[in-house]
Every structure is written in C-alpha cells, then in structure tokens.
Length: 280
Ligand code: ZN
Image (cartoon, rainbow, N blue to C red; front, top):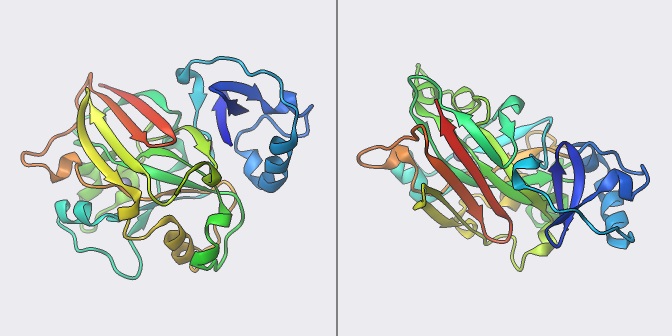
C-alpha cells in the first residue's frame, strides 16, 4: 500500500493515481495525512477491504510530505561505514549519534530550497522510516511490526552552522526551511521483497554523487527502533532519518556544495524520488 499527501489531503496511491481517503471512506478517516498513523491498523484493514473509486491523476509537485507534522523526528548520523570514514569520524558503537530536524524544515518531495547565505549546503539521501505503532522497549525481532512504512528523505545540511562552536550542533544546521523533504509517498514494508536491502542514490544535475544499499547500514531499521525505543517511546507518525552513505560534498576533495540552479534528485528503489532545485 502507498499513501500520500496530495495538496494537504490523505490519499491512497493506486496505479499511479490518487484516491481521496476522507471521501472514499465517507468521513471515517480524516483528510489530515498526519492523523492516519494514530489509527494505522484500522486504516490498513479498511484500505485492504474497501471498494475504492477510480483515482485521479496528479502532478508530483502537488504532493506534500506523507508525514507532514511528526511529534518527533530522530535523525541518525554516521550510520554507514564509508560515510563515517569520509566525514573523519570513528564508526559508532553502542548508540549512533542522534539529532533532530525541526518540524518546520519538513517539506514535500518536489520543492525549491533557499540556500542559506554564507553557508556550505550539502546533500544526504536517506531512507526514512515512519512509526505506525507506539514503540517502547521493542525487541529488534519485533521492530518491523512497529513501522508504518518507508519513504525517501533528504537530510540537507548546512555545514558551517552544523560544525561551528565548541560542540557540533547538527540539529540547527539541518533545519533551515525546506531542509527535510520527504516523499513522494509512504510505502508499507510488505511491498518490498526485502525492506532491509534497498538501493539509494542521488544526483546533482544528472551526475550521480551517492549510491549505496540499506543493507550496509551499521544500525538497521529494526536495530534503530530497538536502540531508540529503549531510551524513549517512539510515537505513531514519528520519523526516523536513518543516515546517509558516502558521497556527500563534505567528504570530497575538493569539497563541493550546492549552488543556485542545481537540481538534486534523490531516489530509493521501490519507493520513488525527491526533486529539489536550489535558489539564493
Ligand atoms: Zn543525515
């Protein structure tokens, strides 16, 4: 099953077309895309059994984030060995570094992003997992059952503010407006042959800069849910940015940053793509 946020309204995506959930359910489910995660199991059962009308065609630019207002966004740093190495950090053991992307940075999949003045703006394609069931002290073996679905995220990062000061402060440098595009839709884990091994890549103006596979995550999605939920409860509709593979601008020689006019396309196998254009 695929769900999307079409112009602010919850939609099921069937054969590339959108079915409005509130209308198709005669009001049983709210049009608010964020509200569905509170009733995830009931919604899944309804969607599986419902006699749905024909969907409508849409432009991807009309999509918002399938999870527009999570109460908590947990983002993971240094979760691929090759990226930890290019960033000049040790590979984490025990717990990975965790930061947030504040909710106002979240956007839909096709956007224009303003480059912060005087900044070095970088790219990080990431698999994003969305929680469908409250998770507290969840065992790794039981973790997938707490995941509503997977989607594509870009952890856009301004490196000057991220790394300035006596201690790095990841959250602010990664939370400028539009720095957390998510989409194009949420895909439930059962749609994948193996939800633990997906190819992710990103390209700038058609030139591939990152390519990896989620099987190379140091902490997999189930491991992250186990580790994080041992510290704090994960709530329905919460978001986990799982980390990025090698190929970011920071790790290049010479370093490279996004410039006005650049188009960044971020793709995950079996899900879809994000498309960001940068402006000053
Ligand atoms: Zn990241």
